[in-house]
Image (cartoon, rainbow, N blue to C red; front, side, top):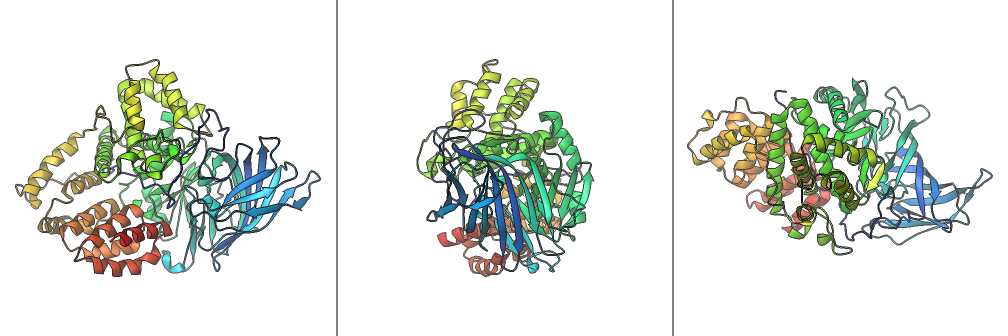
Amino acid sequence: MAGVFLNKTNEPMRTTIPLRRTLCALLAGIGMAAHADPLSYARYDQVRTTNLHLDLKADFGSKTLSGYAELTLNWLDKSARALVLDTRQLNIARVQVLQPNGRWSAASYMLDKPDPEKGQALRISLPTQPEKVRVYYRTAPTAPALQWMTPQQTMSGKRPFMFSQSETIDARSWAPVQDTPAVRFTYSARVDAPSGLRVVMSAENDPKATGAGGWKFKMPQPIPSYLLAIAIGEIEVRDLGPRTAVYAEPARIEAAAYELADTEKMVAAAEALYGPYRWGRYDMIVLPPSFPIGGMENPRMTFLTPTMIAGDRSLVDLIAHELAHSWSGNLVTNATWKHWWLNEGFTTYVTTRIVESIYGAEVAQMGLQLEQEELFISLKDIPTAKQALITRDPDGNPSQTYTDEGLAYPKGAWLLHTLEQRAGREVFDPFLRGWFDQHAFQSATTEQFVAYLRKNLLDKYPDVMTQNELEEWLHGAGVPGTAKRAVSPRLTALDAQRDQWLKGELTTATLDTKNWIAIEWMHFLNGIDGKATAAQLKELDHAFGLARSGNNEVAFRFQLASVKAGHDVREPLSAFLMKVGRKKFVVPLYTALFKSPTDREWALALYKQARPRYHPDTQANVDKVLNRK
């Protein structure tokens, strides 16, 4: 499709919480028979939540959700007499248990001292093993998962807006849950919201609902807590196909519907590769600009950044990425965050396959080359100890325990591409589909994947990959020397032009850009970053208007290169940073500006003005950069 391109959709790991401790030994199978997640207080070896019901009221004045959470429990340890839940900044009013006679009675509980990383354990003492427990509570205005926006921060400027971001361990700041990907549960909800505002959740959403009697939701498939999601605001909906729709603010809904028109085709393409879509509908909501990441794969309601709306459907690989999570991540989930690459590496691989199916091998190959090139660019800033997909450390400091969050995307995908290239798709595609089918609605570890890989691929085809090479992929730094790099003929031809242009052997007017799609501009701009002069960038901008490009990926790269080279782009850059809140763009731009002696004071003034528009996670990242200077 003309104008379609890939972009790197991986974002930094969606948390501000340092991951401090590693995992205990994990057992194969659906669950883990030990209390193994260091980021959760929950004793899910003793009892597990099987269903969650939320009854909540949204108050924009106090910036709180209040009500109760009702948890249905499966007691695994018959001697257990306590339920431990994860919370953060929750004001607990009371706890009740369901008696055999159907009545609710009070239960005693206590909250641990707050931990800056994990929040507080809510410990409920129980004389028996009740089927259900209710926790009545209120969230804090500063709940990390919830961003409460003023009317001025929305497109219409008339009504407020709120949205959640639960990944990785912030669901506990708006619901008392066993906040670990090792525990999956179904859920339902009833939410009261101010008149005129629509509520949507990562569940079945009725587009014809009015909110009379509260907005009601049901999620029949079991999910981990990080996929709990809610948004409230002036929201309209447009159908895209029989099982797809997009929600957005009224002023953005038509542009969103145009941009996402191919979503139904993507669902069908993914199903042809990896089996039936098991979540009913695939709907999306385009959130206000402060949403800090590209997308969040909340099942049945993917949350999206508005920065993917370019007007020409040229950033739709972001949709392919979030859709791919319906198999890798949502269907088969990393058991703990140490195994993050099982979610994101697999999803990044599947994204390329979906895009290839819809838009062709040439486009997919260009995207894959760009993805791998940007991996190597990022390596220089990643400590060697964090370049493994998974570490062997049983318990250590965070720099040695968890892989770099961004690296998990492209390196994990590259491992799967390598297996595919050597085994052939006729072998690898059924292998990967089998992984999804056999582990559907389960939480898995790297050890489980390696066991499946050996049994179903490497034992049958030992020439595909040796044990030593597999160990290097999983536990080694960087990318193994045996990895085959993607090479796009179109990008190779572009490189020749770019090098001539940088040397002054080719003028800007004679650059053959007529048939370039946006991914080629992205590759070109990556290649001149730190090399082009201010004069060259000024000439390039005059010819192509890149600083004001409607494609945010292109505008970001040009502005970043300009700041480094000393080319003045303050006017478009100011507008960009005032309207865009995505960390992927905001943090590198401020980092470059704060380093520039001529731009630092201007950037500080701009940040003071723009900061209230950003998500708390984005604020924290920029503040950290600022405090280093």
